[in-house]
Amino acid sequence: MQFYVTRGGQQLGPFTPDQLRSHILSGTFQVTDLAWHEGAAGWAPLNSYPAIVGPSQSSGAAPRSTPGGRPPESSGLAVASLVLGILSFFTGGLTSIPAIICGHISLSHIKKAAGRMSGNGLAIGGLVTGYLGLIMIAALALGIALPVFAAVKEKAQETKCLSEAKQLALGCKLYASDHDGNYPPTLNQLFPEYLTDKKLLECPLTKDQPPMGYDYFGGKDTDPSAKVLLSSKATTRTHKRIVVTSDGAAALKREY
Picture 1 (cartoon, rainbow, N blue to C red):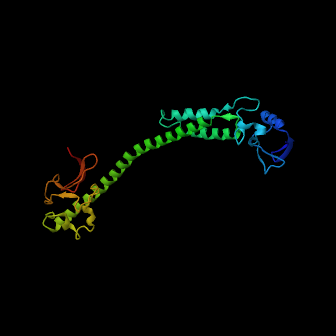
Picture 2 (cartoon, rainbow, N blue to C red):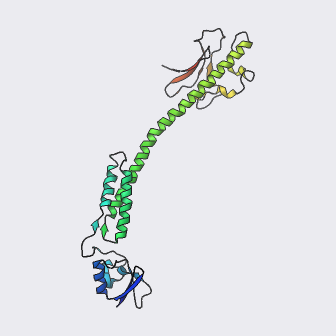
Picture 3 (spheres, rainbow, N blue to C red):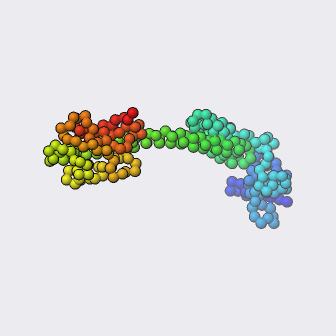
């Protein structure tokens, strides 16, 4: 039986099975090159013909050795990928990206080698451990970022609460100027004449936002400046409470 082979856009042949085996071993042809013989339905890879590569390597199987009978060369990049992937668990994921890069490159090289290079499993192992290392980095970053984000958010809430508490104190002084120096019996009496936005009564530190977010103690504008006029019902994560004194000063004070 005579075979024709197509390679590099050219049709070569005819060749006998023995000649084709010799060309495969020498590296002239690859087992993936397409061949055809008279009576065949179409072109098919050389390794699909048992008469050429033998029954054990037909049906798409690659030859078990490189040209000259040498065993396939192991991919150094595949080995490096696996080593770097394992190291990523001990370096906090620092070698994850190199492991992934080496793994993908080695898989590409192994595929192009058409059986002349081994290490597919090593490369896949490197990719798996590399991606796991990336997940570990992401988890560590998230663990660091969440507390920082929570602290920034709470700081913004504290600043907003201090500002609004000062507005309430100012409203009390305006009320006192019209009522013989007396502060209002309740904070609700500041609205709408002295203050317009009743949301000022909702302290940003309070999660469930009740109608009144402050404890109000009242008094007169002649009270000692250090006397507490109002304080937030809620406290910060560090157990600090918004406190406004009779002189209108607002501050965060820790509870003991």
